[in-house]
Length: 290
Image (cartoon, rainbow, N blue to C red):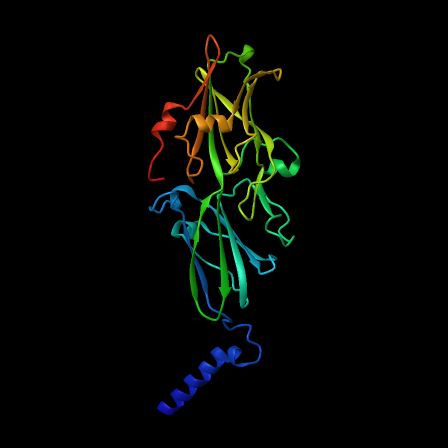
């Protein structure tokens, strides 16, 4: 009886793994499992990924920058900061991740050049006026798929600036809101995390007591020259124009080299002239650990 049981067990084993013994190996694990941890520490040493990033989409390209596969992580994967990459053939790959891509869209992923692939506000693709972008984060890494299991870390960095504008003591007739424009900013960032050619944004603003507030995100450009903030009346007349490079030079407490930074600008209309400054709350919110 014992011999019979052993024979039955062997037959069962052959049946279970028969597909791996035959020439057709489709049902067998081909290569090692590749897992990925997600990390974002801002400008410090403390993990703040889950404080800043709620959604992740990853793109896998081969050595010719041809798209192989994409994956949107589940909420649980984002929470755990860990994911398993789709099964890949042996070879060299590049993994590009975008965090917090909610409204932004991507263009032609099959063009074979990450410099020409980009993530942009949907209005850009429609030729419409842009009011802001998602608070994007970016990560990129090289992957060599082998027969061994591998684990790597995707280190994210910021692809955006937070912008907060306060317009104080501006009296508009009939409850009309002023037009707040940010000119010379980028409508997209490439899959190399490089901001694109400049356009003009028209920021949405709300009346809050005696002031107008505008909050948005813009792509992280590296050259502040030519970027201006303009406030116009309902007839398009320019009431004030603020050069961003001059403003940042005058206010070094706003450090745009950091990952987490808010460009906060307070424009106050006085009885004579206009005063441009950094709001008190913005100075208080600057945290050295970030």
